[in-house]
Length: 150
Image (cartoon, rainbow, N blue to C red):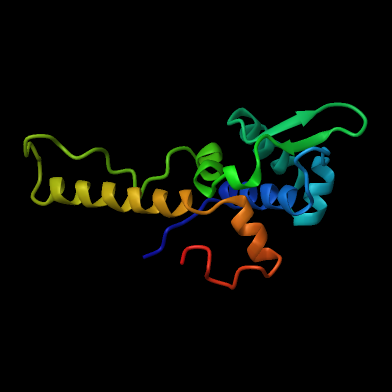
């Protein structure tokens, strides 16, 4: 099964991981610095950071020495929150909600709608279990590869 994370979700996660790795919980980091460290395109990164700011995951400071800082501790920010901030709700597909009282239009529709909803819940659960702190530990070699979701 292939679950696709959008480019926006990947870039948002990489940007916040960069802030985490460089201790940006108090000292602002410029968009330019984040873009250079991560190899992300600065104009697109600016849009993503605005979405993350709107979701309350980062704060910004204007002017000289300005930039972005994490709005909360890295152990309080999950991949699910990051992905949801830039992509919306985490679902297994855009199939709608299961019908109630068996009122299905087509054979198998109700069963499969329920299955897709359960799959979406499992994906959300896995992404909620991974924090920026977890990713930073793995990046620094403190957690073996594959240990995040284990």
